[in-house]
Image 1: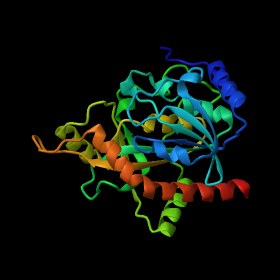
Image 2 (image 1 turned 180 degrees about the horizontal axis):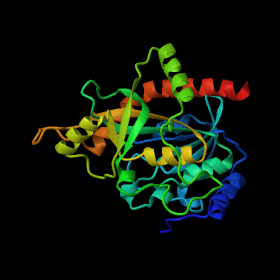
Image 3 (image 1 turned 90 degrees about the horizontal axis):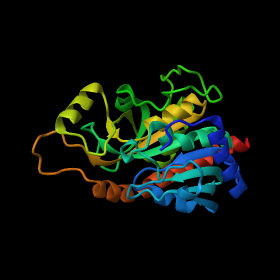
Length: 286
């Protein structure tokens, strides 16, 4: 599998998408486990299966439909990834984040990331929504960074800062929308791990000591590439299971639990997301 891409590869994929859709989105949306049904609400969609798009990987995880959906959601012009790619599937970091750079070439300047995450903060509960303010990129710190390899100056600088990955304005707008809707929205730190196994009790205790509130196997790689390319980034975790930090505990997390909890969270999350997109649409039109 190809692990490095040239600018021509991104442009080839961009041209293919533009040839198969007249939509010109300005907002990208990547849906996590259990949240794929949100893409079904896109109006007059152009749907492209990943396997038909040049250079795109293919989703192999249950709960990830594997389609690019372009149209309007809450009136906003969107490009929705109905399912993402993960490091544990055997893809390189460049393959995982390939669609983000394609979105940039499509003219998208805002990326909204969602994920299903395990709750580490003991004050959290299954069903909570958490606005990601910062992250701990354990995968990247271990040497698997999506910005490794030759830098493409057409996207961004060789050494990008990461103290403002998640755009403050977008976080503020999201909090305002949640408050208007009477939705509880937590704020915290997301830890990115490689997976596919769920974390051991000792690892959860370590992550808690490091200051992580949630943990998952995605999102940060995409956020870094988007920020590197100058895109505005918003990321929201849905807490679909509480992590286990005690050895030999009777309960244990499972992917089925994650998908089931995701389905229960969808109504509240949909309300928040649609409200946010409506607000962003007003900004686009204004």
